[in-house]
Image 1 (spheres, rainbow over the protein chains, first blue to last red):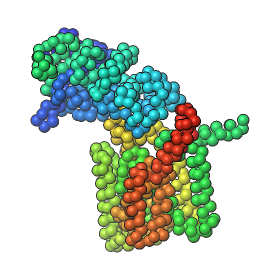
Image 2: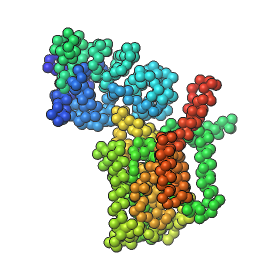
Image 3: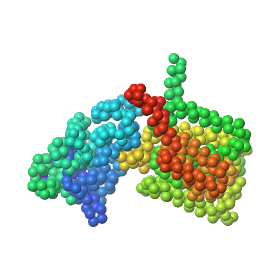
Image 4: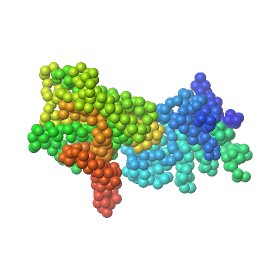
Length: 259
Length: 366
């Protein structure tokens, strides 16, 4: 099913020659079982460098489990994850981050009790020289429309500002792949549009690949062309947003009773 | 101008010791720190060597408090067993120094005491943190370790429980532990009486300043980030398990240093140092003084131990316990952070009507 759509590249980045494609991330037969429950079922999922892909599916489709397998919060029962040609399925989270995978959690998990400046310092000190902290902090705040908040306690920022701060922190690590878990959950219409704008800009300017987990299909439409639909832990469809949206089977499982 | 350049020199000298991770970064703070050090330094002159020799133990306990404040306040690891490393170092010093009764023995005893405590903390920390033990379970395991040592050493009364000439002594304790000193063979100096006081004071000040540098360094930020949100911090590429392991081991080394200073002060140690009341004291000092403030913990440890000595007996613990409950209810973060918040609140109130200039980060006493 997963590989039937010719528009989606699922061929191996893992080819022994290592030159086959520009695929940045590829899972092979990735499986996670909790007792008798198969939360992730033999998933072959690939994404190219600089691509923006949304991963959608109804509640309980296994989106979160799949994401946790990618970040290293969970160990796979079987299968492998290739990133940039290396198998990373058993590396601890922090080593995956060091290789260029960044992550934005669903709930804005900034450090609420620290100031915005200190929040930014946590990722910044991993990659930059202390002399440049001040300047880079200023640049980051400008880019993410957070000017003037440097000395605020992060908890005092608005929800939208916190989302942007978290994306800013994740982007500070200069990742090549960014995993976002429902980045617009709980945001207002304006804030959602702002985040969509921001993601498109980063994706275009920084050449970062994005995997965005989302169930708001209208939001998905505003940011991505290609989507992957998960259902019961397995890939159900892959293709352009129009095709997927008009697929009756997807409507049945994803949109439920609508139509 | 010369006053300008001396001010910038002072700022440059202070810089490594300052940052948002420590309370007290203002001129006023460093001035009162200087006064406190001066008072502690002339205390033996004012009150005589006997008073100094007696008071030395307060500084030793302060150092034990700091060992907990560092790991709990800055990395979120609440160890209830700092006394385990304290006691193990004490017994180790006793065994080495009693058997090699010379300056060499005492010097080696200091090294061995701290080394064994550090190794013990590293081993325990390794199995806990790499084994995925977290939060309250760390607290329980560390307490259990202290209590197991209490029981174990309590049953070492028999003559078979001796290492060379050093008898462990069961609940009667290990007696005849030599004074603090450094040297080789018969050549060296003995640090007893007021000299022990100065040795403990020097160790405390050095530890205080060293830890201030550490918690404001990149590692310190990583510690604080781990304390605030471990999962998040790991997703910034930090090996939080390793950070906790290193922090816990440093805490064990500091507790070991205080243990060596303790047994050389009283020339004696018994298993009550591992008992639950002893194990609770560092937690009480850090809670009352403020676990995120090394200075606050030091002040609280000295004040509470002094108070306990004045009160003596059953009532001492009741009063200290009541004090803990009152402080926890009134200022949950402890006294020092409470004072900091008060100063910040007063300063912002004073500044607000004047101008809305951004808060000067350099001199605010946060």
